[in-house]
Length: 445
Image 1: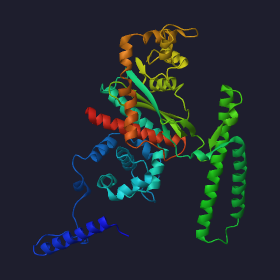
Image 2 (image 1 turned 90 degrees about the horizontal axis):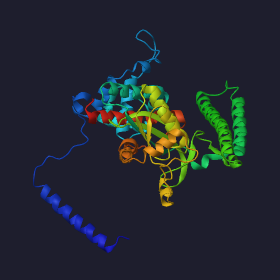
Image 3 (image 1 turned 180 degrees about the vertical axis):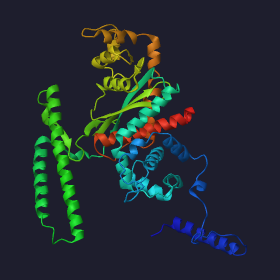
Image 4 (image 1 turned 30 degrees about the horizontal axis):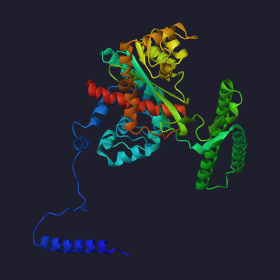
């Protein structure tokens, strides 16, 4: 039943439409025709605005050394076979997709058929989601080299100094489900069942002479899926044994609670920003303090930032051959071991002293040397008592947290791929896209 008030509105609308139609018939107007087939003689270049950012993305890709991407091609001008897709097209598509907050290969594939900027980048070259996904997952080393080359070029231009770097981490939700985590005993049982299933499928597929083509393809797909599941469970079993040993080393008996996912063995349950625990990876960015560009990326499955500062500092020094003067981190990074290691290499750590507020409430001086402090950590305490260093620490959010926020704004909330290697490739794309946009803002491109 339609309410009385709604029926009144409907009658009023019908009356208005009748009046409008009667008036419209007395005048001559041009009405839209959307079913007429037309031939529009426009090139892709004419359809895209001259100042569209897709042109900037393509210009940036053209300036890169992409020689490495062509090394896997086997079809040449004088050999038989289907021509491959230019890898520069795939790279430009992913950079453009990241700018537009697209992380799904299937969605990117769809945009290449419907959106003019993506059609312009493709230039009538057909792509598919599988090729797009494989390109992103299998070229992590090139993406890291691209990031380093870009930062190095900015260093030569004087835009990146590496005098001060900031580091911060963010936990990004993994593709694994929370219910996929199992303990060692359950994983061993699942592993036996998976191996038995694969063995049975292999025995059934031994005599395929009587099978038709479609059945062979279907059986091959089922066998391949079973083998991949068995491999994942095998890796989960290895990971849970390693995690068991780590927990036992920290606290006797805690290793029994170790669990690993059967769908993504390298993921770990981590405490997220809302206080809940979910499968995730810990993404670490190092950012230059002057240009605010990302200079290094690391992805770990450690739920804590302890131990990450020393690793990142060593990577920056080894990659660029320069030791930063200052490294800005929050107190979670500034452990005694990491501060000691970083300061021994010649970099001053700028952070808050862990537990400083509680010590002040108890009437203790958090900046005075404590028993067990190394000389480097004691110097760090004393340094952070100075107003100028406390003022320098206030710039940490604008340096270290800025890229994290930008990546979140561009859709970095959940990974659609599995494993540390693929996850790092995704984050290197985010970092390269962030740097590209920063270069545009700085007038470097």
